[in-house]
Image (tube, rainbow, N blue to C red; front, side, top):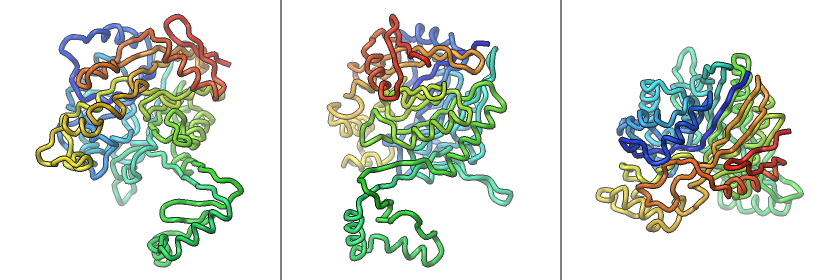
Length: 431
């Protein structure tokens, strides 16, 4: 039996679609309808100021009117990740309002919920040939955004299915001695040490604490990251359960973290996480978050997309921002407007995401599975109007630009993945 899957990156949508299809929309929608499973990441909260702005956000306090959900039916995705670094931009009330609007619109989503069990649970898509499950998670957000587990005597906490991670800084004995010499007279660890003495925190084991950072004595100087063991166990348990109940299992992960500061390279813990999910039964890993493409790895027969980039991107046309946003750019929080804030952030559209052409081009991977085996992986370029004004750019159209395929091939080569141009698309060479 044959099952087809198309996967897109971030949809950060803040404007309603035109009343009639925009140029290229019909061809894009027709292309997507050819697939049984059509995935995208919904990187926006959906409500009309129904939540209170959080003290922190994912960068922009992301909110769109619920009417966009009606518009999105014209671009026919049928399963969504809603766990990302904007999910609680408007606190718990904003998240709960988003849940309500998604459910009212009958949209299948995963990654957020009214408690941790709900946020961690798979969502299922019934196709003519197969049952497909998707589990969604996010690594890039504050820890307090994580959903809480339900108890028999206490309700859970709304939030996201978070994959936390640990950062260890490996340093030489001389470097560690210097850190200890500084920490003492500066009382860097005084608050933590007091909490340990009073029983509020456990003593550290296996590393030296310097404020909030972990240092390990070693012969080399390097940074290493690893997934939080409890989160990894919870998510891989969800994968194994989904594999019991479905033919194919997709895992979606929203992650901005980098390797050695290179935005095009995934952090070490993400590779560990992705491999563990495939080992648990995942058929594909769908990564997104940094708003640009990252390479593709083929691991034990499963494709790992470390970032699918953007698909629909309207980050700079939000209509409302809280006072905290304007304060960051030294604007009057009472009289400044959203457009003024965006001008200040982008230095009048001379820096930032709007000036990076990589942000405005991407691919849609098109996967064909025969029973549970991947037998074809093609890559359809899309572009979002890099040269247009910010209030018009961001809408996706199919592209014939093979330069994005060439760039993706270079990014994928270190993973041992070969990608070639195949007419107007790219094609990965499967083992």
